[in-house]
Image 1 (cartoon, helix red, strand yellow):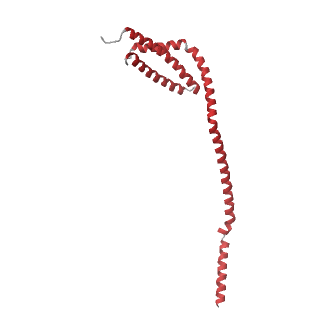
Image 2 (cartoon, rainbow, N blue to C red):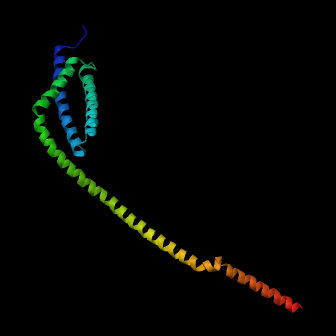
Length: 181
């Protein structure tokens, strides 16, 4: 006859009751992590999805180890019952503790972030000062170059100075032509 002995099935039932209880504890641990990071509804959906995937994987692995991969309805019912027992007995007490632990973890995260980001903030401040100095230097150089170009402007672009050269050339030509005659 095909099937498992009664003692194997009772052992599976008790295993899945314990598994449901343990998954309730895991849900509260995930709640601590979620509350210490953020309290947004999106995070709640993401963590609930992760918890559902974790439950599916753990249920599958437990069914593999207990009943060679066969998953029976009474196993799922026992798992849900174990989770409900945890939820209705210890969850109210644990939830108060998780709020406190989440607050402590949030403060620890902030402290770690401040300590670990301090060198980065220092580098950024130094970089800002360097950029500010080079910006000042660039403006000063541009101002000096503009001033130098303005000084040279009459020499480069003055038509009168160019006409002086023509006048000198004419005078030289006249002088050479007068000497020849």
